Image (cartoon, rainbow, N blue to C red; front, top):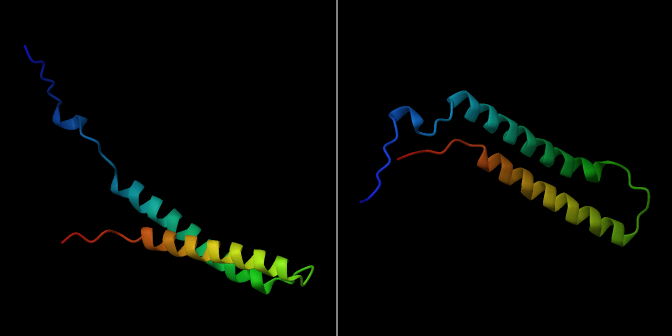
Length: 81
């Protein structure tokens, strides 16, 4: 005999619309902060002008810039067709 489980209609996973909008806002703010920090990293005076230090700053700022752009892109609402 096969066992069948019947779930009531209220047991479906539910995510409130307010929770989604707050989550999108937080992700967008984090993305904006990462992009501003990537630019600010080059505006702040550096203690040394060694090429290795500048290369490290370049890698960190590129990572922050791409991560921030990804966060901003992922915070946009999905358009359904």
